[in-house]
Image (cartoon, rainbow, N blue to C red; front, side, top):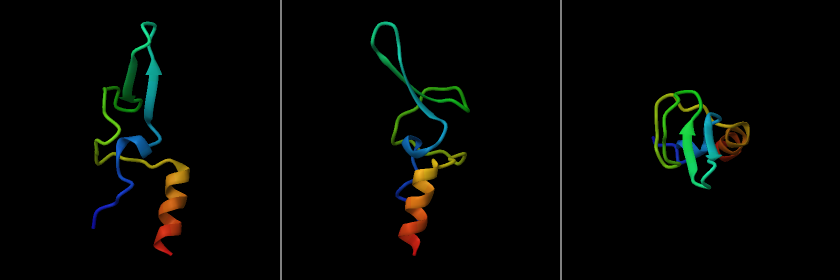
Length: 59
């Protein structure tokens, strides 16, 4: 079964940082490399609000 919430944008390690030249760096703070919001990795650790949404949906 797939989890529709499982993606980098919903992980607690997902970060967006605005650079001096106004470009954005989208990356995983834990792994230290650039990513995209839709990527999926096995190390995914959802944010609290996502956990609550998943729990509510499973009821």
